[in-house]
Structure formats: C-alpha cells, structure tokens
Length: 307
Length: 308
Image 1: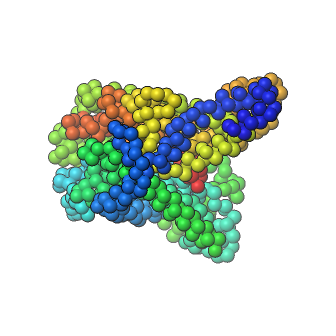
Image 2: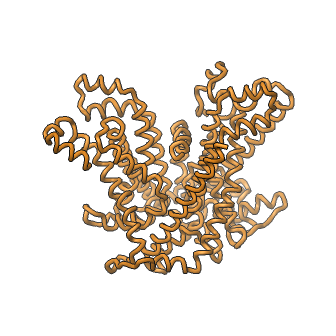
Image 3: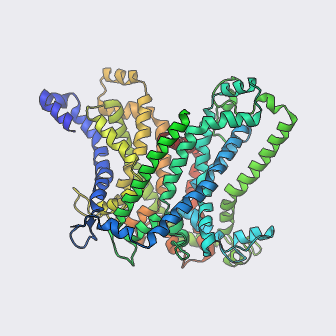
C-alpha cells in the first residue's frame, strides 16, 4: 500500500486513478480486509496475548513469561505431550505404509484403477464428525458391538476399544488413518503418474526385475512427495483434536489427552474458566516446536536428497 | 471411474507420463506376473470395498434398522424388517431438516466469500500486478505457514470483538463465513492458474476497450472454470466438514450446522434415528463426490503439490 500511495503522490493522484490504480485497490480490497482482519491481525495478536493475562472480564495485564511458566508447570502437560507424540508415531506406523503400498499397487493395475481411486477416496469425503460418531458406535466394547462381533467370527475379542487405557489411542489412530489414507493415496497416485517411463525402460535395459524397478525407480522418484507428506502428516497429527474430543474427551484417565485438547480446555473448557493467555502460550510453544522441527527436517531431507 | 478419461487414447503413445508404471507390457505377459496381478486385483478389490465402502454400507443399513436389532444383532440383515421411519423421524422430529438447512446456508456463504476473495485477490496478484502485489503475496503466503492452532484463540477473540466492525459476530453466520474466506490455499491455486492463462488474450481484450472489471468478469473468470470448480468443491466440502470453529462461534442450537448438532443430540436420540441422522448428513458430500469426482481428485492431488 505504502509504495503505491507514494508513487501516486509522485505522479499525481489523478494519473494514478486514470491508470487504474483505484480499480486495482477495489479488487485488492476483499483480500486485504479478509486476510488482514481474520489472519494477519489474529496472528499478531496471539504473539502479544501469550505474554498477557486476559480472560475478557478485566483489562489485559502484562504477565511476562507467567503464562509460559504456568503452562510448563501444569502436571497434565507431560501427559499431553506423550499422548500427542504417541498418536503421531502410531499414525505414522499405520498411516504411512498403507497409502504408499496401496498407491503403488493401484498404479500397476490398469483396468480398475479409476474404481479403486474412487473407493479409496470415499472415506475422505465423509464428514469427520459423522465418521467419528459412527466409529464410536462400531467400537462398542460389549460383545454385541459391531467390531467385536465381526472379530468374534474369526475367534478374536471381545476388545474394550475406547474404554481401556491401552486400547483407546490405537483405536483413535485406526479411525484417523481410515479417514485420512484416501487423500494421501491420491497425492501418491498423482506423483506416480509423473514418474517418467524412460526411467523404467532404462532399468529394464539394465536387466532390472519388477521389484528392483519399484525399489530403485518408483520409490526414489516419490522421495520428494514422501518427505513432504510425512512432515505435513506430522504437523497435522501434532494438532489432533477431533478424534480425542469426540471419541473419548481425553479419557479414559487422560490416556487420550492431547495438546490441542489442553489448549481447548484452557480457553473454552467450562470447568476451568477462560485462560486465553495460557491457551495462546501453549499454542505458541507448539507452533514454535513445529517450526523448528520442520526446519531441521527440511535441512536433513535436503542433504539426503542430494547425497 | 471417470477419473482418468484420457487414459484410453494415451495408451498408444509409449512415452507419455503416466502411461506405464514399473511393470512393463513384456512383464505382463509372464504367467507368474499375470497370476500375481490377478491376485493383487482381488486383494485390492476386497480390501478397498470392505474398508472404504463397508462402514458406509453399515451406516446405510443401520439407518433403516430398528434400534433393538442394531443393539442385539448388529450384523444380522434385517431380522425384524426394515424401519424406514428412522429416516423420517430423524429428518422431522430430531430437526435434522433445520440443521441441514443451516449447514447449506453456512456452506453457501463460505463458498461465496471464498470465491470473492480468491478470484479478486488472484486477479490483482496475477493480472493487474500493482507495485504492492509482492507485499500482498508475501503476506498471504506467510499465513500458509502458520499452523491452525495458533489462530484458534485469537481468531475467536477477534470474532468476539472485531476491529472496525464494532459489535460481536458471535452467533451470526458472518463469524463462519468471513474467517473461512481467508484461505491462502485458495488464493495460491487461483493465482497460479491465472498465471498460466495466455497474456495475449488480456492484451487483446484491453485493445478492444475492456476495462479491468470487464476483463475480470468476461475474460478471466470464464477461462478459469475448471479451477473454480476445484476450489468450489473444496470450499463446500471443507465447510460441510468443519466442526471446531462453528462449535466455538455458533452457540445457539437453532443456528448450528449438522457437524455441531450431531454430537450434541446423540445422548437423547434413539440409536436407529441417530444413525439415520448420520446417514443423511453423509449423503450430500458423498453425492457431490460421486458427481464431481474429477474436481475432487484433481483438488486432492493439488493440495499435495501446493503445500509442498
């Protein structure tokens, strides 16, 4: 804006208007207002709020690092960090190989590829709330629960699913993987289409079999996409909210309490009252961690990609 | 099924990207590979149908099953008949009709504001290109890198007490529509598409006397229908899926969308009726997906490319 006004003054406002400067501003206005009000301003505000004591009733007070100290001394924080990390690791173990294997297999199949693609993406279009509520019903711990009855046919179970400390988190991750795998499959399939056929032919001339072609051509060609989906998945799972909130509310016995659930409880949980300062402080710490983590990750993967 | 419509005629030319994968046509003639491929086909078919369609099928079945049957014998196929009344009572008595309408209104408004912001914004960044375009671009792109969690509380407080507007947007649809329009992802994909349009056409339109508005409305937008389709599908589906934000800013049950009402009504709703409500809520996104598959899958592939 500044530079435009500056140059306008130099050339005179009339020439600026005649040259279309004003119309350009009219076109830019929706973006400036919307992003300014609902993106840039809140982001800047959160930086200030993390250092303030504020609950909307009184005026905000400068609190220095109190919010951070208070959050860091919360006995729930180590539990939430461990749970979130556990969720992320499990989501990686379930959610990383399955779409990759699925996409590679689907790209080799010629005739039914379109049908498989549609099926694979189907869970991703089901509203997440519906998916979670439906799975919560499937996860019924009674022997007549849907999953327990299904598994009972092959002599397994009944399992407690969401009602047990050990079972709860893997149950959450299983549903999240089901809901998320389709989107990842589509991304991999798009990348697989981009693998040049010449590379496979060159490998064949060198006498490579199918496995070696997949290992030495397909997977290395996907490396860039794999690195990116991996970090995006980690960033997303670090902010997991819907599954623990709707499945278990953080239970049983805090076994599924995640960082985002803590942030939500600080700011909007009725029993604790509103502690916006603590919530933003924890959000900032999580964001800072993710930023540092991503930087290190990209540094590392860049050196791997080059070697 | 129509996801790759051009594949059939591509197959003849050997070195088009995507024409072939690791297994060559020579490999395919080997009997072991043939058997393995047949096996893979069967496994993929069974696993995908069971895992991806199975839960949806169960949901459809339960939505017309009497509650007693759902509880006692969930896997039996209608031992005591079909109960279509589940759907009717979900729609009328549980007021899914009202929440459905709320969801449609929220999605329509979010769509409108997202389109308004990303098309005009993309037009400025890509076609008009004033001197401050680089600053705007940098600001928009930088918001892509801020994780959603950072925005949650300050955005809530902004909606509660917005600058310039003066009164709270809480419990109004503006509180959902306007923040959803600040989607950097949309602006990026639209700007990239506008960038790929031939400049000569803009010049020709200008020579013919088209002003910036005319150029935008009659040239740029009609040429951008495919990408606008992708962005529209994304906007509507994202709005249909959204849960946490409407939960925070729409406190009155009467104006809440399905995603917020469904968990709330679960406790006091008959199980069969509740599952019918879930099925109704799933219907629109699934139908949209089946009809506009290509836009969906293009968009899903694109989200990987843009974020990367």
